Amino acid sequence: MVHEHTHEDCLLLVPIFKTLPEKDLETLSQVVSEHRYQSGEFLYHAGDEADALQIIAHGQAKVFQIAPNGKEQMIRILQTGDFDGEAALFETKERASFAQALMETHVCSISRSDFQKLMVNSPELAINLVNAFGQRITQLEQQNTEVTTSNVESRLANYLLETSAGLNQTSFTLPLKKKDIATYLGTTPETISRKLTKLASDNLLENKGLKVKILDSDGLSMLI
Image (cartoon, rainbow, N blue to C red; front, side, top):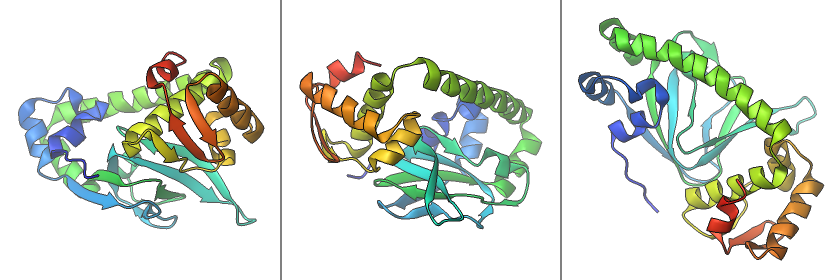
């Protein structure tokens, strides 16, 4: 399914840009590039130059590294509204990780050169960016707290609903293996299996292996 977004829609997903004056938002939207990735395609590879801010307008992508033994090490999942590469707007560096689409994913990006030109003429943009860095640190601290304080069932329910929304389907195959979901949610594959079984016994979903059918999205939402 094709999801249509204007350039301004993409920008407004990111806290950095939400409070910009309309004229600055319009100017910035003119330098936004759009890319669509099919499931399995790479947004970027380790070793690529990190030279742009990327915004997930719709979809889901996993960010991972390859360990010396050749195995993937999950770092995080980019969901609709997430952004990646803000540090690339200020310095030239190489990517240390890979990002791979888990479903059809629409990405908006702004190159470092275009962004820096605009910053010269927009003090508000520079201030918002500094504030956004502070917000990102706070968000990471909150995420770490959630892993230790919120229950796995709640985090799993949220992941399932986000994945369903990204695919625009209530019946789907999980795009990640259970071990990767476990890494993302800060638990074990065995716990993920047990929680899926419990959600199924509560008639919130049907589950067989990696296949899931959400039966009661409102019920799942109440767990979050």
